[in-house]
Image (cartoon, rainbow, N blue to C red; front, side):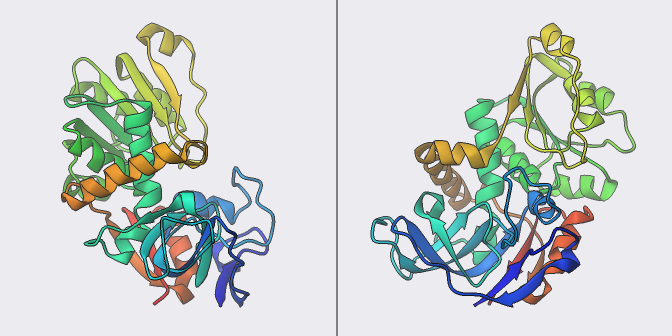
Length: 324
């Protein structure tokens, strides 16, 4: 089979497609014939050696796929050969066949395309865990999303809207702001042109209830200062490349919470809750309340271009790599 391999840390152009053996499937794993894979921003960091998992070279990047079950390990009861599934992993997505622990494999809704399924588990799983498990959002709350045009950002925006929250999309360009309006944003803020703290306060006189922060850097503190009493800052990522250092008097004065959101570890430690979350998400999809936004689709032979598109912050929604 063909695999995209990172054998040395560097740029997308350093990735190579090679022949490799089909993975050996353990008793609690499923072998998936990959139809589509989706990239996420952390994938651009892994190929630079900036991951948080201590990966060993060489490895196959990518953490999100959809496809058809080719073989189910002897202890797997949920799936059988021929089932259409979507799955997530730390690495190993960008190859023609991939083996995945059954806890990380989910049935595709019947009306969902393979491209949508590839774009679903990581973004929507992260957003649901953040908003429901960590922040316990409810109708009427105000939710500001930093990096709202990215994969997790779009998912959080759509979910917050589905939960009848007031949504504020915070992005770095007018083009991305326009895009977020099509995804259900009640307000948009271009934090490269506008004062983020002041604009957030104008959208909600009592302050913002929940902030989903995928960006980090200076925007973390600026947005935190707009929080309501007992508001919540959800730390999800650092797309800006900078980790903020917040003055700790700020959460004290606001009675506010700073909450870490690390979905991949959560799903490993709490697989039953993670599966319940995914069931709730697929039901929302079936109801037409969620829909992955596909920015662009690349053929497997052009996978390096997909990495470049994401690295250069041109993506609105998700990029897909197709194998068939």
